[in-house]
Length: 242
Image 1: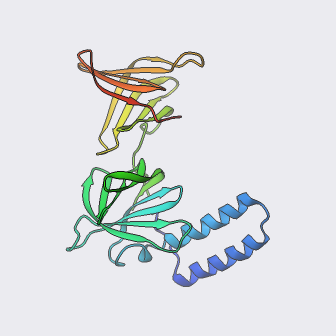
Image 2: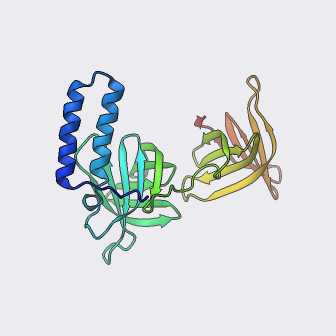
Image 3: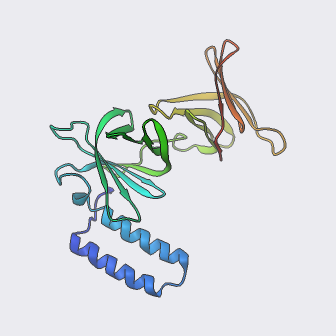
């Protein structure tokens, strides 16, 4: 079923918001209150005719982060790459910026000194080249309702998710770790290599090794090292480890 089916008319959205406010008045559980609020916000934002600059420019990608919805809208003769639309979950406003660059599933929009960037892994906003906001993407969906591929291949378990300055890294497999998947933050380029060695131990440092030709990838819960012919070419601290 398409992600954008069952859309609400403006009147229906207002009715839902009214019902939600009544429910919120009577709901004592903070968890239930949060669910009602999110359902109201999601229903309103899924009205695709209200998201893009024009009702003819329908969303082709939708991203959900902890605090924002981001939509990539179709382009027109003025901006053929499309539009980046950022909608805060807690506020009734949105930011609409023309996309200036697309690399695989990474979209970049620029408005004066601000750069807006989104891919299936994270949303980032930079000011004069410095990151001022970064949010992990919870879900990334195509216009046909299918999720955008990310992380481990379908059918695999995810044993480790790690982040460095330049990479998202996943250790994947079925019953045991068997592959090393790395995605560049900058261009969304992915590699998938078989693990040559791996060690998971509650006492010792976790360590995973993958090899491609004369390039060796070594990941621990402290650092990522990439070496070529025995010489380090990349060494980055692990910022996140799950």
